[in-house]
Length: 147
Image (cartoon, rainbow, N blue to C red):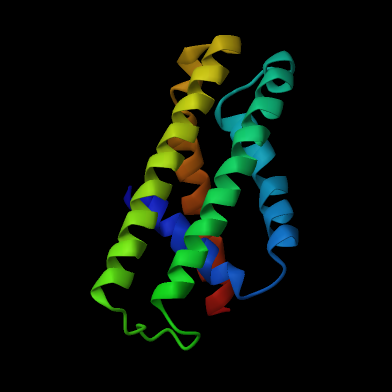
């Protein structure tokens, strides 16, 4: 969960630095070889893996976009907290919880679909590999920001 929050923060920060689709494609171009190598996918396995993964990744990307919209409702452009009524705050909490539930369902479905076509002994490592990728991306972002 902490890693997910870090990735979310990274994506929110990156959102202010360019086109979302272009940035997503650049990240994806880095992600493909990283995941392929870390999971030790054979060419035949990669051929099965990537169409399934990309489909779910698109859904997760859309959910993260919706989550960023919630973030915008909570904070002003300057980063200060918006004044929310109790009902507005409760509504945001309900939307957030629904998004978290949907993200969990998408990840669960993805792992189920992947393990029907690929070895579970490799797919069990996918969540950790994704976290490692996010960590690496975050470290690179910090390096570039400091230079």
